[in-house]
Structures are given as C-alpha cells and as structure tokens.
Length: 269
Ligand SMILES: [Zn+2]
Image (cartoon, rainbow, N blue to C red; front, side, top):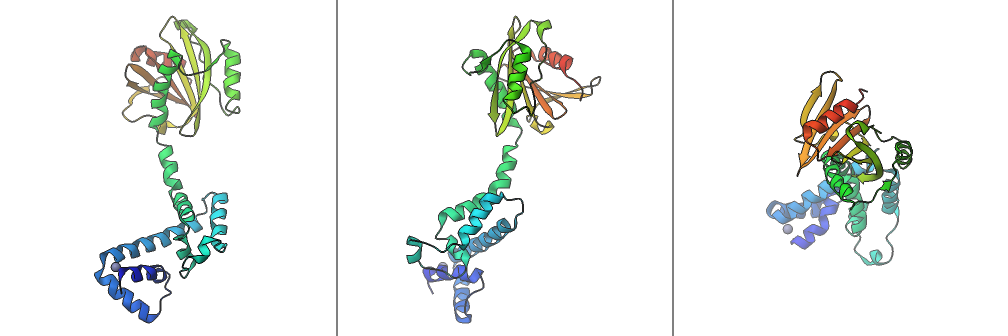
C-alpha cells in the first residue's frame, strides 16, 4: 500500500468502517510511515473536535444550525463528481468552507477570551487622548455638561453614562465627547479643556480585569477605592472602578496631579 491509498482509507479508519483486510494493510502501512501517522492523528483530532462542536450547548445557535444543516444536505454540482468517502466526516474534506466554519466555531471561545484581554482599552485611551486634543479624532462639540451627558448616554442606548465630573475648580470644562468602540466594547469619551492641560475621561462597563498590565496600584484608604496609574510617552492615565463602571482619566498633567483629580472625584460604589 502506498501513501495515496493509505490516505484514502484514513477517514474510514477513524470512522471504524474498514474491512478486516483493509484494516490489516493500513495498519501495516501506518507502522512504517510517519507522514500517514500524522494524517491519521489529524483526522482523529478533527473528528473529536467536530463532535465537541456539535455538542457544545453554548455555540451560537444560528451558525451551529447552518453548519449542521449543511452536513445533512447532499453535495451538489461539482461535489457530486468528487470521490465520496464513507461517513459524513469525509465530506468535510471536500467542503473547505464548512470545515473552516467548524474550526471557527471551535475557536470562538478562545477568540472571545482574547478579546477580553484588558490592555487594549487603556492603551487606546492614551492614544485617542492625544488625537482628540490634537483635533485629529472627530467628536461632537457640546459645552453644556447636562446636554453632553444625555447625548453620550443616548449613543450607548442608555446602558451607562459618562462620569460627568465637574472639573471647573481646576479650570477645565467639558467641550465635547464621542463614543468609541474598542475590542467590541463601547466607551464614552468626554473631553475637558481650559487653563489646565486637557483631560479626557473614558467611561465603560468593565471590571478590574481591564487594568493594564504593569499599572501601579494606589489603594485609597479613605474611599476604599483602588486607583491604577499608567503612562505612555508622556501621557498619563488613572483608572478606577465605580460599581460596574470603569473610569480612566487621561491627561498630560503630572501623574500625582491626575491621581489627585481622580481621587477627589471618585465615588465609592
Ligand atoms: Zn504513508
């Protein structure tokens, strides 16, 4: 038996559908052929993976249904002329799109975990601050704090609102805001300008898992709030949590000053 013949039987081998003589000859080939051993392992892994995907209750219903109905449908057009291996699994080999969709389904939980990696929002806040101050990132101008608050909350369907801090004591007033989307999450940004270095306030639904790696912790003993500070290229950030809301203040003002602002405005949840 050569490799081509062996590979044609591998799917059937995995599906336990070989005759005794076929089984004997492929087993003897597998004993001495590393390449086919590898293909055999791959096929077994794929079968296990497909089973897992098929039984995963948490898989998105729509996609799962499409895939499962795709499996039941007879091959049409070109697929009819292709060799038909035994078992539905072998059909996968001739349906790259279907195989890809199944693979995607398996990867979904992994992708989801990666998307909830904390660093992106904090990092993007530091970067978007610079662009907002420079005017290269568009935002809605609205100097009335109440109107701005309503407008921003509306643009996230009222699920949450901006912190709406009054920073007039330090010569800063809100001038506008925007809603950004980072890693699939909506973030409300309010820009404050005035006589002190400009400040942006980022508000989003999150947890302390959104604290960037390497951030310094300042545990406020009075308010019992953890503040996390971090910097990137002269731009400073201070993050804290109020209930289910995360707030990041970003500014080029010195970090101790920015931390003092955050501490004075933060409300224990
Ligand atoms: Zn071989």
